[in-house]
Length: 255
Image (cartoon, rainbow, N blue to C red; front, side, top):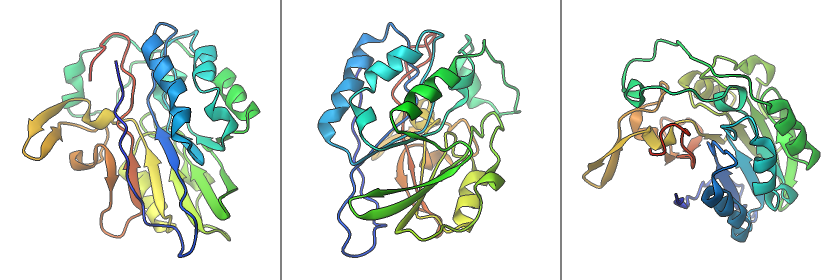
């Protein structure tokens, strides 16, 4: 397994502010056996980010919490923001991957509870901010950033009312969520945020060759397929950056 580094520029900083380099990753789905992926994650410190944002699904195994904290160790000295996804709460179970292409009727089949509170404590002990139900303000390169987030919308754990409202006195307002459902994007857009960071889609789960690149077949939510990965901008909404994710289900080692 290897990863693809994608770079994008989001023109949202006020004039005269120094650039901010953000490392955004998602959907690690780590297990103790993923040695190559763990080594790749450790190498990300070489990109020298000013801020790290994780949009959830760190875990895929009951014993993965110390593995995640070890893999991220170097990055945990850098300011960080995070939320959780469905696979942080519940262990994966075998399922037919073709179900991703069928209509989503909201039925979820969960595995056993995962030790996400242990991961939460470990990340926050190093200074990263959990945004699943809160807003926070931090200063990066003399830029004041207000960040807010939601819990996982795929499980309908989200409650945007907990963080709703226009941003306070800041230079940049961002939103962080795991699954980029349109209700989250609309709510953050109504509050005039500048950018939103999300994951969950795995770049479309399945992609086909297409003129100009490749085409996503699904987003596993109600986000249009053309927005399945990377930076998109639509109809005066905030910029949306969706990480294509890095990991896979332990039962299907392919995307």
